[in-house]
Length: 360
Ligand SMILES: *Cc1c(COP(=O)(O)O)cnc(C)c1O
Image (tube, rainbow, N blue to C red):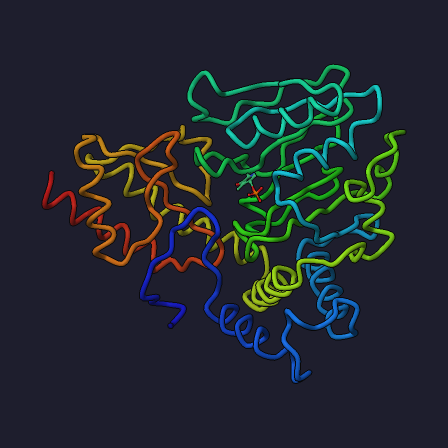
């Protein structure tokens, strides 16, 4: 497998493509972790070897996102789906409330979970236009924080940068964490399932401002209280060792490739390549409004719906995997996470051009 011309072009929305070197090193560690004579998945999580892995993973998150000391970094379980609840539990004070920007399916689910915790309401929504855009954030009312989903994986919309609001942000960054630098001080809490842009399924990253944590006045269940995990250095219970190790490898790779600034440039180049073709080719139509387009997930449809299965066949024949759109909007979705090379996007664009020649 070469990183410039993979045999399969993996556009899967998640679990995502990972760098070939990461897959290689992760599989070696399953056989034996760093010359220890033991497998990564049979060694004690309290062993020095694994404690080092957890510490390196947390340190890499800190360095690659330039986090100040008052931010905590944890690798927990439950996916972003438990993050919906955990974030609301830890950052909505008893008697307080959280505003939600409802920009897609995941945002809706986040709001639904938060409502079980107390007061949570939609601040804005783009549901009436099929979640095809990112609406501007209006001023908040009495809320303590504003929850956003920075990248809407299903609809292919994304905030352009970190929005500025009058309250601290709580963000689900599952599908664009590490795709660009972030203005961390705007956020009280960020959570992100690993399997979109960081690693394999099985762990979820939490980053939060320690000064704002532990202040809800609620008696939270231990596992759902972020401060309990922080007190135990993200080892309150047995961590998901394989997912943390592989995420750590991906973060090492990210660093060696020039970090989030380099990723931002590459991701912009990939997005420019696919959107130019979507806009040029009369057989295809973009789904998201141009000013809300995601750099990570490009959503589009066939102008003639009868072409949909034919184009997917052409993609499969060209070694393109994972292009079928989410069932809620149909069509196509090209997910272009950090590890996807520009050459894969160029291949997809070639297939689109060829499809125009043969079916236009
Ligand atoms: C995939 C996804 C989720 C759900 O993640 P799980 O880890 O499967 O719970 C939540 N939010 C966003 C933005 C996603 O892309």
